[in-house]
Image (cartoon, rainbow, N blue to C red; front, side):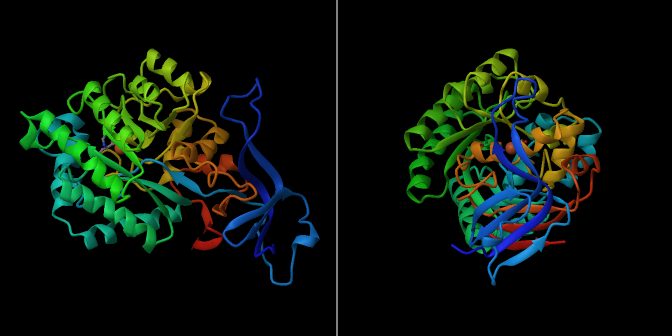
Length: 415
Ligand code: NIG
Ligand code: FE
C-alpha cells in the first residue's frame, strides 16, 4: 500500500480516538489530540496517524505532501440532525416570532412546519435538489462531511417519498454523505385534526414501502405536547422497529413528555433536543447507550432554555451536537456557530465539543466504525483549520475557520 497523500506539521491533530476516561476529567474529554501530528492517506482511507517526523519509508516518489503549518486538523465533522430537504423559507414569520409569538402558536395557526409542508409539496424534485445542494456547499465550507437528512415536510406519501428520493439522489450528485431518516410524523396535517389515528396509520403504512425501496435507514417522530403524544410515538416507533428501522427521536424539545425515557426504553440511537429533559430523563439516558443529540442553535433561535448539557455530561451521558438546520426553528447550516454556542451557552469544553461533532455524532448514526475519528482503516474525511488550537475556533465566533476540507481522501473545499 502506497501513501497518496501525507499531511504533516499539524500543530494539534484531533484524531478523535477515544482514550480511557480519567477520573479527574469529564467523561467526554477523552479524545486524543496529538501535537506535531501527521496523517497518511491511501486512496479514500487512512493508512497511518502519528506524531513527530513522518517515517521516511512511507514517503514515496508519487506521494503528495501538504504542510499544515502548525494548524489544527480534525475528523470531518458530522451534522447528525438536519431537515435539509425543504421548499421555501419562513422569514415572513420572523418579525412575529421575535415579537414573542411562540413556535407552537404559529404552528397552530397553520404556519410553522405546516407552511413549509405546503412549500415542499409545491416544489419539484429538481427544485428541492438544487436547493439542498446549495446548503450542502455551505455545510462543506464549515467542515461538515456527513449529514443526516430527515423527511417530514411532506406528510403525504407522495411528498415524503419525494423528499427521501432527493436524499438518495444527493448521495450520488455531490460529495457529502447523506444519511436518510423518515420522519412522516413531524406534524399533524390540518385535515386529520379530528382523525389522528388515521394519520398515524398512514405513517405506519409507508414504512414497508420505504424499507423496500431502501429510502431511509432511520425513523424519527416529533414527540411533543400538541404534536404526537408519547403513546402515539411509541406505537409508531414499535412498528418502525419491526421493519428494521433504526430509531431517533425529537424528545423533550419544548415541553417534557418523557421523550428521553422513551428513547432509553426502545434503545434508540439518539434522543434529540432535550431542552426540557427531567431528572428522570437524565437517569434513564445515563443507564442507556442513547446519544443525547443537543441542538443549541434552536434554543438560540427560538429564545428558549438551553439543554442542561453540563448536568448530562457530568452524569456520564455521551452528547452529540448538530445544527437542526431547518427553515423554522434553526435556519442555519453553520455547524461551527452551533459549536461556539455550545461553548458559550452549554458550557461545554473544546474537547467535549469536538468529540460531540465527530465520534459521538458518528455513534448516533451507527457509523463509528467508518467515520468520526482519524484512525487506521477509517475514511479519510478531515478538516484543516486556519487556527493553531481548538480553543481559538470556539472563542473567535461567527467566522469560518476552515481552510481545507477532504472527503474520502479528496479535496472538496479550499478557502
Ligand atoms: O427540530 N421540532 C420539530 N422540527 C424542527 C423544526 C421544524 C420547523 O420548524 O420547520 C426542529 O426544531
Ligand atoms: Fe429537528
